[in-house]
Image (cartoon, rainbow, N blue to C red; front, side, top):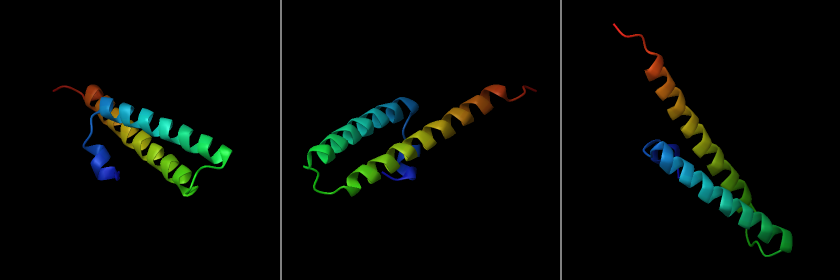
Length: 73
């Protein structure tokens, strides 16, 4: 997924996506350890995807906190 697709998701969906990617990363690392992983670059790609999800999630959190701190007129 790219950043545009991730930014369309809600915070709860991002949390679920991060959990799913972390499970995939665990499985890839396990397969890598026992020598069954066909493409070792999947580990790297999954790490990058997790980082993207965390970045978008943080951006949404910052936007929400700014909206809550906005002075009322």
